Length: 251
Image (cartoon, rainbow, N blue to C red; front, side, top):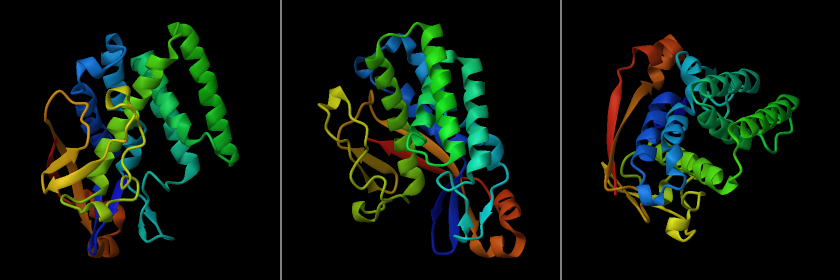
């Protein structure tokens, strides 16, 4: 679950819904900026399914008694989270081995510096999976693979940007993830950092755009009132909150 706190409510976005916005971004990427375009279908599939491990977990969000917030993807308990990471990657590999490889690389990157035993074990197991898939797929061009992983991560971040920041948020008040731009760099941008900012309530401007033209996306989300959580508990309050939609155009 992606969580953004307001004074009297939590904005809650299911991970797979966010991933579908990421998919739209990948699908709309300019062809002349898309290295290894022969694998575009696999890359778009990886972007679309990269958070499928959260589908089941997000049906019943958990309350974090320590922070007095719902658990988010950033602090969800490690053991179940990593078990579902593996399950999600397994499922994507079955759909498309190259897409599964990208998802494995994406998730393993989160655990590269892990200090816990389960974190280290996950990273080692995914490195083994990656070596097996690289061999089976006969991949030798690491530059194209690296570009595809970078594209996945950028599209992931672009969608997270509109999940974690309310429409119209001034740059200085944005979520700290994005105040200094997106970490991914691309040759089409001469390796410059790409910045995003809200131009108005429905428009986000990119300093350099990888897209064919304007990108229009719709993000489903829920606003769950803190008072309802206090009265009913998180899961029932979330379940009974209506689905809302955030329409955004990237320029």
